[in-house]
Length: 237
Length: 237
DNA sequence: TCGTTAGTATGGTCCGACCATACGATCAGG
DNA sequence: CCTGATCGTATGGTCGGACCATACTAACGA
Image 1 (cartoon, each protein chain N blue to C red):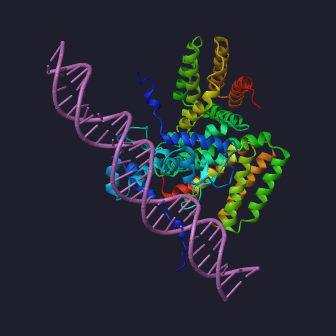
Image 2: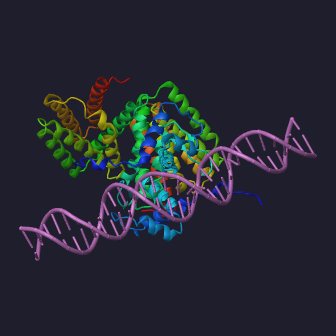
């Protein structure tokens, strides 16, 4: 008679979530295909539409389905980008607080310092090729600020890709998306682009020479200078 | 006549979410206090309970309110832990896939390598004191495997805290929570504990001597050995 | 063959109801 | 006066049914 585990009172939606979750990961529900209609699911689970909709909503925030307002939800197999998407719902709120942008940017610098250091130590021939190409594309875009921004991002992205761990490209996308609003609005010019390109080249050269300390130093200079621009532009700190 | 921005068809709940979000971040709704009752909110926003509930659910997944099944939702000011909590909903799914655990663990090793390197270069006197204390507590717990696990985690946590960036403690909590299921079940013994303690001590000593390379190497040895245990225990890869 | 159009499927919202439980107040007993 | 049991109310969880607007589809006509 003792209501021992009273805390196990579960929401009915949780069961539906678990079931659909299993079906998605198992491939029973195919990726990129629409989810069954709500009214079908309620018959299937013997639950009310309320419960079904709550379950779908939960799946949506977990990135397992893509839920555009008036359309059928689309099944999405979970990937590392899903994590970032989920996190992305909260990050903007943090950026409005105290040193939020500073903290996020600091973590990016810290990570990229480690990435370039690793690159200097362990870059493969293919890595070097990829970096060289990214750098060349960056140089070619100096006079086109929009394209320069793209190739700039791509150059840094190459660093993230070198770990061959899907977490890092996802992280890179997170950083660029979250910091973009504070970055895109900055004034740009070919001169400034050239400065950034030279910074990228310095990093690349240091990696080529297998000099981790120099690579890290060059990266630090580059990103700290960029931070200075952001800081004064938005009057932070 | 052109339905230019037809995609702006918003869910009614979004407006409620935005409003409550603003109230929480502005402090109008106090942290740790219960949210107004659903029936009050519907009067206030002129919306149906359906919409209100959906809004609350959304806030819950964003970590702005804590929503235990049968209780009043509790207001939670957004923090870096909220991000990790949101991400934590998806991470377990990824860990069941292919090299999921490997990827996550790899990212942890990579981060901690950077952390100990930084510690060796830039640790303050207070940092050293904190590390020494964490290490001492770890040594004292060698014969108590449960306590050893706690102090082990705390030692690593000290490394994360040294950046004085709240992102890192949150990350540390994420790593420990996500990897815990694969870690806690491993067999433990005073001998193994002693080995881990010695590894911690080697890291600490290298930091003391301001030798980043040695610190990083010691950390790598330590975590790679731990990975080996996990790998064979769970027959991964 | 292709654009138009009508009909249907489906998601979004609302309403009103009932249940179970957390909460708060009231009351009985020491 | 304090403590613990009791009871009524507030509140979240679930249900079923309804209506609307729109995405989708198939029939239709130029």
